[in-house]
Image 1 (cartoon, chains in turn red, orange):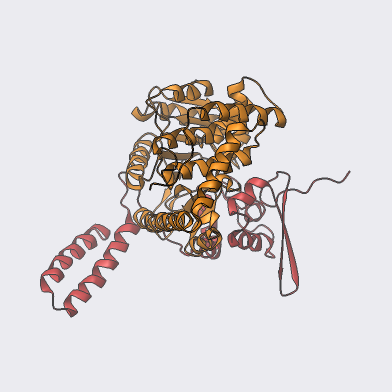
Image 2 (cartoon, helix red, strand yellow):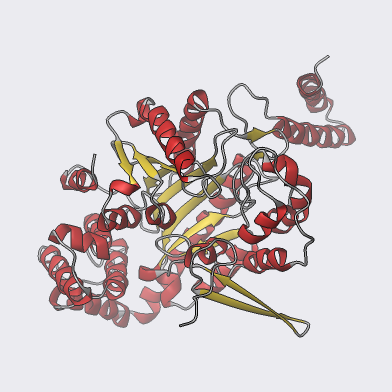
Length: 160
Length: 356
C-alpha cells in the first residue's frame, strides 16, 4: 500500500491537494485539513505560501542560535521555531510579510511598560500631515495645537 | 474541573444567550508567546508540558480566571474535546493535540488556549455585537497576562508569533453572523467576495476550514501588521454594520416579494423539525436557521430565538452524544438529535406572517 502524502507545512497526513498552473508550470501542494483551513484553502494566500514553500531555495544558510531552527525548516513548515528566530530570519521573511500582510512594521500596542514606538511614529506622521493642512487652510489655532502634540511625540520618541 | 461542569452551566435559566438577529457573537483573539521559549510546534514534548504548567499557574492567579475551568487536553475524552470545539472554547487544532490546555473563566466569556500554534491564544467571546466591549476585556486580560508572564515582543514587529500571518498585533477580531437573507436570495457569494477583497476572511461555523452550515459565517480581519488594533476594529466594524444592513434588506425584500411562499418555506422547515425522526447535523442546522429567521421577522415570537440558538449548539454531534451519555453512530446521533429538537419545539406556536 502506498504511503499517504504528508502535509507540506507540518508532518500530518495531507487530505487537501492543491494544483496551481501558472504559465504552463504545475505546482502541487499537499496540506492537512488544519493547515489548509488556516489559509482558508480558497484564500490566495495559500498559493502565496505554496509559492514560498516551493521557491527554489538554497540549502540552510541561516540557523537560529537559540533553538537550532533553520531557513530550510521554515520552508518545510511555514512556522518559525522561537521568538529569537524573528531576528535571524526577519530580513529573509520581509518579502513574505509584504505578500501576506502588505506591511512589515508593527504599529499597534505594546506590553505595559514598553513604549508603543510604531504607534507613536504613526501618530507623529499623521499630526505632521494634519499640521501642514491646517497651515494651508490658515487654521492657526488647530496648527498650534498640532505643533504642541508633535513636540510631545518627538520628545517621547527621541529622548535627550 | 470538567467539561460536564461547563455543560451544566447551561441549565441556569438566567443564562440567556443575548445573541442578536444577525450577529450571533463577537470574538477577539490575541496570539501571544513567552519570550525565550520555543514555539509549540518546534518545542520538545517536555518543554511543551513545562510551558503548559507555567502558563496554567500564571493564568489561574489572575482574578478573571478565579474559580474558572482548567482543562488539560491529555485528560479529556475525545467527546469532551469535541464539545469544547463546538462551543468555540477551543480550536480543532488544540483539541487534536496532547500537550495543550485551556483555561476558561467561570462565565465562559474568556478563555486562553495554551500550546496551540502559539503558547497563548487569549480569546474573549461575547454574544451579540459588542466589538469595543469585547476588545476592552481582551486588552485588560492581555495587560494582566503581560504582568505575570514575559511576552515575546519586538519594537519593530510587535508580538512575535509562530506564523507570519499573526505577527504584529496578534489580533483576530471576528463576528459570527447569520445570513439567511443573503443566502436565500443568492447574494452571499457576491458579498463574501467583496469582504475578501477588502482584507477580511469569511469562514464557516467552526472557524478555519469548516463549512458555512446553517447560513452562519465567521468574518474576521486577516492583516495583523501595519495596522493598529484600533484600525483593525474600525475596519471590521464598518463592514459588519454594512453587512447587517444588507442582510436586513435581503430579508425584507424576500418577505415582501415572496409573501406567502416565504412564510411557507419557514413553516415547512418548522414542520420537518417538529416531526422528523432522523435529522442530520447539516439538515438540522439549515432548518434551525429558518426558524431563527422566523423569530427575527416576527413569524415566531422573538423571545424564542435564544432557544433556537441553544438547539444549534445542542444539535452538534458531540453535544448530542454527551447529553445522551455515550458515543453514538451516525444514525444514532440523527435519531437522538431529532428527538431533542422535537421535544424542544413542542412549546413553540405556529409560524405566522412576518411582523418585523
